[in-house]
Amino acid sequence: MVQLSARRKAFPLRPHPAHGLNGGLTYTERMRRHFPWITLVSALLLVGMTDINFLSPENLLNLATDIVPLLVMAVGMTLVIYIGSIDLSSQSIANMATVLTTISLPALGVGSGLLVIAAGLLFGAISGVVTARLKVPSFISTLAVGGIALSVGQFASGQQALHMDAEQRKHAFGWIMGTTAGIPHELIVALAIVAVAWFIQNRMTAGRTFKAIGAAEPVVVASGIRVERYKILAFALSGMFAAIAGLMFSVRLSGGSPTLAEGFLLPAIVAVLVGGTPLTGGVGGVTNTLIGTMIVAVVRSSMLYLNIPATGQQIFFGLVLIVAIATTIDRSKLRIVK
Image: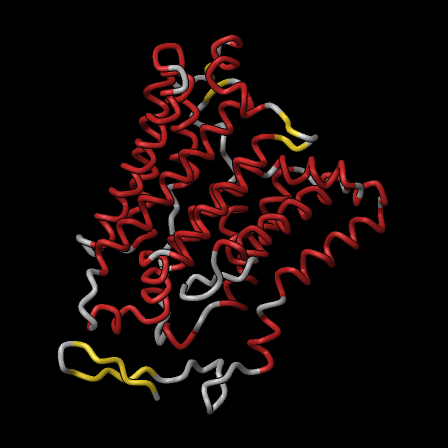
């Protein structure tokens, strides 16, 4: 048993139930760490057996590029799930971002991107304040903020699809659509965003605090850390990443709509959970989500090969979500489920 001292009082930190009596990881827990990449490799091989061209470098590169917005959205959501909360506003913020980008592009040019990022940061921070300060459960607060973001997008767009001027788009964001050595720039940008999120998670005080909050929030509170501030930061970052995902959607499709990113919320949550970051938080992280997003991409691609309609895909991801939660959640933190 480890003692954590805070304000002259000792708080015991007992070994996690998944650990052995001496605090070491059990065999099941050690194997669980490898499940995401084993699942990814297995999925690639299974689909590759039906069509060998699926495993070609060109196709895999196209597959990775296609899920860039989903990856960026899922990475932001990871930081919230990492602290044991949930963000249901990401899809609506991304939709709003596509509209704001398209509307502000003629006047602000590349500055429209900064405007959208600031808007995402603000909406995420509002979710964090409502959750941390007003003590509203995160699934309610983010659902409400997502509804507000959706309404803003609908009002700003007049509830219709908007289109960018081709020259203005090329002048402001043409560099995102280019390639270097055959690698799309938007994929490079996405990997850079993942690297930034990884740095925040593993090399900054905020990231280490996120993990501590997810693992044992009462102990963190007792140690004197201002937990509310870090929760608000996690939600703000999630909103910012969702806005960036919307920005990339808008640039790719040359326009905006309050429903452009529709259908991405469920796959984003699945990507985080399948990657190994449970809803109870404290373990997993950004790297896991990168693998989880690729798993989702392979599964979606295989459904296209099998001609499964979009509604069928949502049903499948709903079932996967239930299984992922049931198999990864830390029940020691949930004495009663309501």
